[in-house]
Image (cartoon, rainbow, N blue to C red; front, side):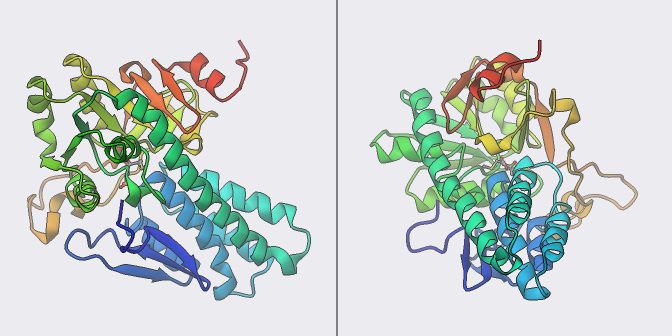
Amino acid sequence: MPSSKSPETLEFSDGELILIDQTRLPQELVTLTCRTVEETHDAIQRLVVRGAPAIGIAAAYGVCLAAKSSGASRQDYLDAADHLATSRPTAVNLFWALDRMRATIAATTDETMLHGKLVEEAKKIHEEDREMCKSIGRNGASLLGQSKCVLTHCNAGGLATSMWGTALAPIYHCHQSGQAIEVYADETRPLLQGGRLTAWELSQAGIPVTVLTDSMSGSLLRTGKIDAVIVGADRIAANGDVANKIGTYPLAVLARYHSVPFYVAAPSSTFDLELADGAGIPIEERSRDEVAEPLGVCAVPDAAKVMNPAFDVTPAELVDCLITERGLIPKPDRKKVAEHFGRTLAH
Ligand code: MRU
């Protein structure tokens, strides 16, 4: 989590969306200001702002920016929401936040009130996210009470949300309660969110962190040093299958093989209860360059094809517990996920 002196992950002020430019960390801590819908779309697509909850909040503010680039009719705001929905496909928080903005448009009959109501709703989504982080921190800490060493993948911390994050929230909670806890962070190929972002924000918070290449996690788990693996999620299906950063699935398999508990922390807004299982989750395929030219260096011959899916799906049976702001779902399945959200199953 950035320190109190750092800029916020995202901030909406004077009709502008100010983002920590996460593509520049850890070399430099700088912000990027979005003044239009298009600039917000670009910032989400380029991963200036990333992580499922942060993408949703940024998109909500992005809708408000339609006011600047146009005459801001009802249709302009709806068009902004439709356009922002094309920025990234996997994190369902994006579509959840945009649906809330569309519902606000539908509920506001007086067009002169529309901008104010939309800013209000976006700020509400932002504020709820802070509360969500605290609750996930508390709930997850009940599982990490005895843990000294925790392994994580990608970045599901303050840079991916408005406050403590999801997977990192229980770690911040334990650290604040005086528990000695240290983190091993997979570097997370190809864009190094673990090495660049998780290691940066944990260091800022004074939590010991060690970065390892993704291919080292099996050997590390074999040593018995890791008490738990905890990751975030971009979309969780009704049966508990989890889409998260590419590399999460093999980590879950390794954790099970080595009898290390595997936890997934995510807010309600990351659940897609309309999807029966993970097979229906759209997986973003990103550009060849991210793999073929890491840090601008040619690493793959032109003749070779490249695969670059940004996410994978971990089956629910490999998840020991889902942690949400509402509580815990141990050994998740369709019935337990439905019960957690107060839904009754048709059969
Ligand atoms: O491509 P990214 O950096 O947006 O991927 C982020 C992740 O996979 C996170 O683990 C996930 O969004 C959870 S963030 C609280």
